Length: 288
Image 1: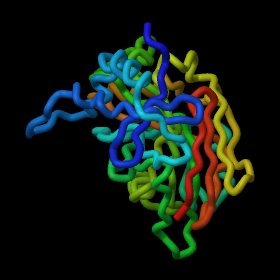
Image 2 (image 1 turned 180 degrees about the horizontal axis):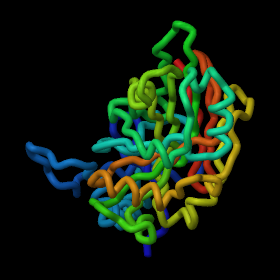
Image 3 (image 1 turned 180 degrees about the vertical axis):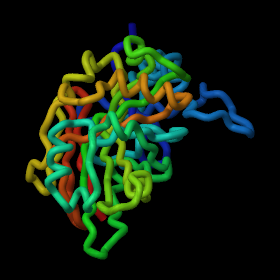
Image 4 (image 1 turned 45 degrees about the horizontal axis):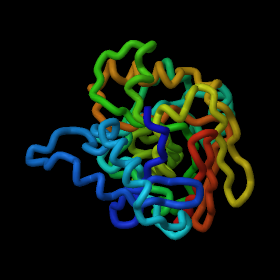
C-alpha cells in the first residue's frame, strides 16, 4: 500500500508533492492523464485517476525538482470540480450564535441543517490560499470568515449508504466558506469570486483515520476566532456524503464543505487569516 501523500497545485498549473517545507514538482504525472475531447465529461480527470497515478507520483517525488514551500503560489488542490456542495448551520453552537447575532441572521429565522439540507456554491468562486479573498461589497455589509473541513469525491457515486460513504472520499483539505451577510439566498452570498478558498493541499484519505474527530481553527491577524472539533458536527462527514449522493450524482473532483463551527466574524482588506485542521495542514490567506 502506498504511503499517504499531500498533493498540491502551484504556480502555473504545476503539480507537487508537499514534504515538510518543500514542494517536489511531479507535474510529469499529468502526461498519463487521458486526452479529453468535446464534450468533456463531468468531473476532474486528475482526481478520477489519482488512485492509479499514485505509484508514478511517488516515483517522481524521489527525483523531482524541490522548491521551498514559501516560494510557490498555492492554487486550489482541485482544478475542475463539477460542483461545490456545502452544509449550512451544521454545528449547534453556530446555530446559537446565528440566532443571537443580528449581523449574521439579518432578521431571518435560523434553523438546523435538518431543515435546510444542502446548498451549492459556484465553482467559479474557488481559489487557492495564495490567490486571496476579495471583498466585493463596501456598503457596510459584513463579509465573514467560516472555516470548514472540506473533502473531495474520488469516484462517481449515487445513492451511497452512510456506512460506505467514506470509501468515496479521495482526500481532505481546508475550506473557507466566505460569506456576505444579508437576506439573499446562501448560494448568492457565498458564491462570489474568491469566496471558496481550498487548500493548502489535498491530503489523501488514508492519512486521515477519522475525519469526524479533527480539531479545526482560524485566526485573524493572530486573534483566534474559531476553534472546534468535527466531532460536534450535527450531520457527520459520512452522512453528508451519503445525503449529497441521494440528491446529486457525485463526480470525481466534487467538493463537499462540511459546515462551520461557532466564532464566525467579519474580515476586511489587509487582514491575514490563518486556518488549520489537525492532520490536514495550515494556510495563510490575505484579504484583498
